[in-house]
Amino acid sequence: MIIKSFILEKKISLVDEYFVVLFYGENIGMKNEIKDQIKKHYKNSEKIVFHQDEIIKNDKLLNEHVHNTSLFAKNKIIIINEVSDKIKNKIAAILEKPKKDLKIFLFAQNLEKKSTIRLYFEKEKNVAIIPCYQDNERTLSEYLRKKFAGYVGLNQEVINLLIRNSGLDRQVLSSEIDKIKGLFLDKK
Image (cartoon, rainbow, N blue to C red; front, side, top):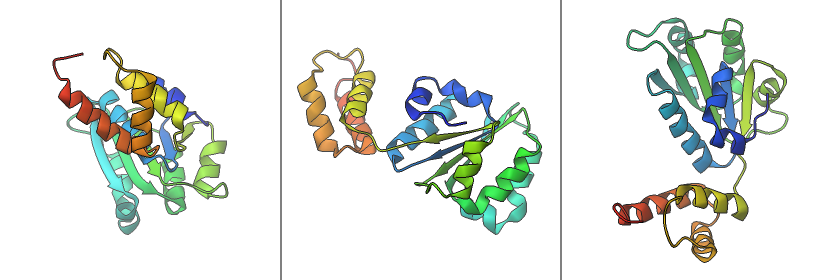
């Protein structure tokens, strides 16, 4: 199932419907924010983070964490970074026996249309795939308005200045937002 990233940003609980979710694309800032939202959404779950290379080097590592129940929390989430086609078969094997108390989130760089993992996630029903394409001025403008909701004095000129200075990079813009909010801790 393909889900648009802007829809997911508005309602992160959409990931609850899927056992495994794949995020891919060149928008690193968006993927980092989605990771943070997922961690907040599943704040009472045990969180395990891997890099794909760790899983490839140790064949049993992922299976052990998938099949072991958590002693500390009812639910568990596994986040795997830098995913590529190399891990597709391991994910497909795990999907044969989905678990209700486990969610797996995969984060990849830009995947080609011919990518086997991308094709697999686009065709399967019980998984989701979210492309995180590069932002444009309109999407960043909406992003800024959302982040500065409640602040007085925000106008289109200030928004345009921030967007220009960020070079259309959400990660840079997010850093600038944090700096600005730091200056206005008790003010509007």
